[in-house]
Length: 296
Ligand code: SF4
Image (cartoon, rainbow, N blue to C red; front, side):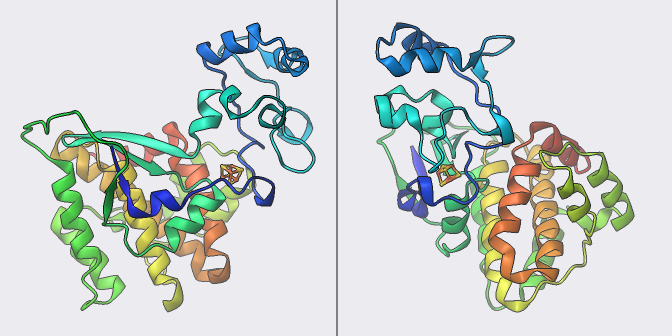
């Protein structure tokens, strides 16, 4: 299994996190962990069992302000403090990791919706360097299309520092014939308004979208790294060229959206990147809807 070099820097910052992933998300409990909770004889086991809503997919019933019932007032997880990390359900143990299967084996990454992962991703210039996380027993598959070769090529265009950032983006648009400029800003704003949101106020925030936004020079490196992250996450499993271009179009749109926001609030680019991630690419429906605009 492979990961970008920055992957090993990640460690959850727990009570130091100002936007905990234990607030606002529905947390599903997988079957194996549910069985473990049922058999748990520790006094905290009863609290856990009482906190699970089994209607539909079993999940923790959120408290006021949408907090996980096991998140204490200091931002620490009661399941860990009472029972240890082994008692976390799959989602809590894995977050913010995501996995992709490529012809060369599995890849793992850090999702930018996590505050600490976002900080690491936007500060890492070596997004095109990969490290082995666990030895792979899988033979490299011979496939007619290899998305990782295209990804390496896109990264080489993105890192051609002899050109301005704007011109590097244009090279990618031209090489893959995919560009957010294919739709008018009005059409994009209409699409933005039709998306689903965790926080409705973000709909208004995103309505300042403009494909031709130009963020201050000091934000360019972070925009480049955010785009590289989107590409790592959304283009690496493409099974053919059309699927790659749809994924790439989606990534380029996310970059333009972040640039539109950073144009007005450059100092807040880390927070803005996290918001774009959690509202757009963490929603399967939103991702699909935007990708469809690039399918041809
Ligand atoms: S968002 Fe990231 S850093 Fe914050 S509590 Fe969750 S995993 Fe930890």
